[in-house]
Length: 619
Image (cartoon, rainbow, N blue to C red; front, top):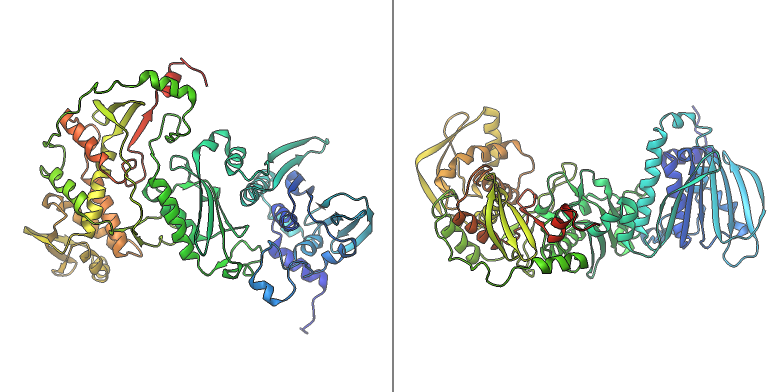
C-alpha cells in the first residue's frame, strides 16, 4: 500500500480518539481553555450526561473576531510560540488540539467577544466542516456549545457507560477544578428536556477550600479538615486535608494540583500518606487537595494526550517536603475523636459547649494523685516498666522512622531519618481513672468530659514506641538462648531466606543453615524478651513472603508486630493500679492518640455531647 499524507479531518479524528474519551473529556478541555483565558466565573451546563449537549460559558478575555475560525485549526494556539516555551509552560493547554478534535466528532457552536470589543463572533462547525460564521452580539468572554458528540464515530458511543456514570465523571471533574482553582466561581447545571434546570454544584470563588469541601461533601466536613501553607526555596505547598478521623477507601477523593494542573502523581501520594503515618488506618485515604507551585522548568507536561500525567524532575524531594509539613502539623494537634467524629480543637469549641463544660469542671484537687505504682503484672514481663521508661528518656532523637504507605498500587514511601525537628510532646489531657468496662475499655474523667480508652490499643502504642527505638539502637548486644530456636520451611522458602537473611540480621536475628529447609537461631537481640521468641517464626515468614524488604521497613514492621502480639487483649480485667500505670505510660508516648495501625486509642465525650444524648440541648 502506498504511503500517503492523511487529511486534516482524519488527523483531527485520530487526535480526538486520544483526547476525547467521554463527555467529561470535552468539558475538561473547554474549562481549561476558560481558565487560561483568565476567567473568574465559569458555568457548565449539560443534558443527558453531555450526550445531548454541553455548554461552557466564561467571562474571560475572549477570542479576537479575526482569530475565531483559526482557533479550530490543528495546532493553532496563542499559548506558545517556539520550542523554548515548551520548557516553561504556565497554561493548562498549549498544543492547539482541543477545539479541532472536539469539532471533528461533534457539532460545535462558539460565540466569543474579545475583552473591550463592541462586537463578537459566532462560528458553527460540525464534523470538522464550517457550517456558519457570523457576527454576534457582544457579551463578555466565550460560550461554547457541543452537541451530538461522537455522531460520526458510533463505536465510541458504544463504549460509554450509563448516564449516571457519565454524570458522575462530570461532577468529579468539576470538584477537581474547584479545588485546583478556588479563586474561580464554578457553577454546574443539569438541564432537562422540559426546560427545567438543576444546579448540581457551585462555589463562591473566594479561595476558601473549607467551603468547597462543604459544597462537595456536606457542611459537616468543613470542620473536619486542616489547612497548611509552607514553602522553601524550591516549592510552595498549600493543602486542605481531612483529619485522620475522616477518611475514605478511595484515593480519588484526594486531588493533586501541580502548577494549577490536576495531575496523578504516585510520589506526592506517598508523601501525603507518609506524613499521616500511623494515624491512618490501612487502605484509608484522606480527602482534600494538595497544591504545589514550582518552577515550570522542572515539569514536562508534554508526555500524555490528556496532560494528566506530568514528569516532575524533583518529585521525590517534593514528596519529602510534603511529608515533613503534614507530619509536623499533625504532631501539634490533640487527636482525640469526640462523639460527633470531630477532633478536639481548642479554638473551635462552641460557646454552648463551653458553658456546659464550665458547669462540669472538676474542682482542684478533688482526686489527689496517688503515688506511682511499681507493680504491673498485666505486662509481659515484671520488669517492663523499668525497661521502657529509662529507654524512652535515654535514646537519642536521631532514630530512623519509617512511614508505611497503605497502598499496594504505589511504591513504598521513601524512608527519611527523623531530622532535628521540633519535638512536640503530645501529653494527654488531665484525667482521673475511675473504672473499666467489659475488661476492654478504661474510663477516665477530665475537666472537659469523659475519656474512654481502649486498653489494648493503649498498650500497643506504648510497646510500639519502645520497640521502634530499641530495635534501632540495640547496639549488637545479644542474649544466648538455653535451647536454640529451630526454624523449618520449604526448600523454596529456604532459598528466599538465604537471600534475605542479612535483613533479619539487621534487627538482631542471625540465622544459620541447619540442613535442608532448616535454620537455627542461637541468640536473640537484647530488645526481645526470651518469652517473646515465639514471634520469631512469624517474623521470618513475613520476610520470606514479602516483597521489596528494606532494613527500615523490617524494623518498623517488627515493632508493629511485637507491640500487637504482646499487648493485653480484650476481656482482661485490670486492677486500679495497672490501669493507672497504663495511662501514665501512655502519657509519656510521643504520639499517644493512635495505635500503630492508625486506630484511635481513646475517644472523648464532651459534656456537650452527653447533654445532646439526653436531649437537654438541641443542635
